[in-house]
Figure 1 (cartoon, helix red, strand yellow):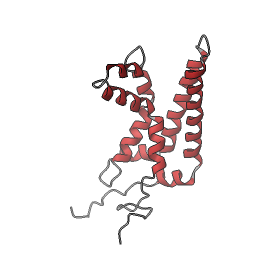
Figure 2 (cartoon, rainbow, N blue to C red):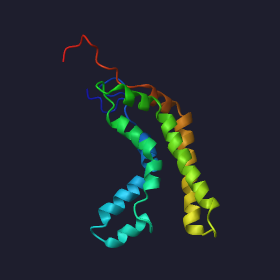
Figure 3 (cartoon, rainbow, N blue to C red):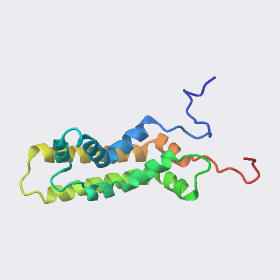
Figure 4 (cartoon, rainbow, N blue to C red):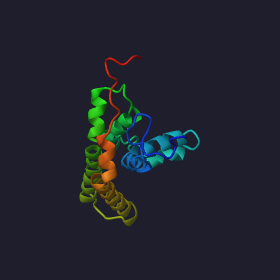
Length: 162
C-alpha cells in the first residue's frame, strides 16, 4: 500500500502540509513579486514598474530572510542534515511570526510616514498586515504547527552501514 495519504513521510516525521507552503509564500511575497517581475521583464519592459521607482526592493527582500531560511530548512529536511538547519526548523513558528512582525512593522512605519492617505495602495497594505497577523496567530496557536516544527528526521546512527 502506498503512503500517499498518510500523515508521515518516509523518515517517520510529519509531512509538509499545504498550509506551510501557503504561509511561506505569503510571508515571502516580495520575493515572489520580484521574481515574477524579473521573469516578465523580457516579455514586457513595463513589468519592471511592479518593483517601484527605486528598482529592486532590497530592504523588503532582506526583511523576509527569516522565512526563506525556514523554507531552505524545509527543503533539506532529511537525516543527513546538519545541526544548524535542525535548530532553524525547531524555531519555525518563531521565524514565521518574526517575519510577519517585521512585515507589520514595515507597514506601520510606511503608513506613519504617508503624507496623504491613498485608499488603494494603503488599504491594500493594511489588508496585507491583517493577513500577516492571521498567519502568525494560526501558525503559533495550531497544534498541527507545533507538531510539525517539533519533528525532524533523526540523524543516522554511527553504527549504521551506508
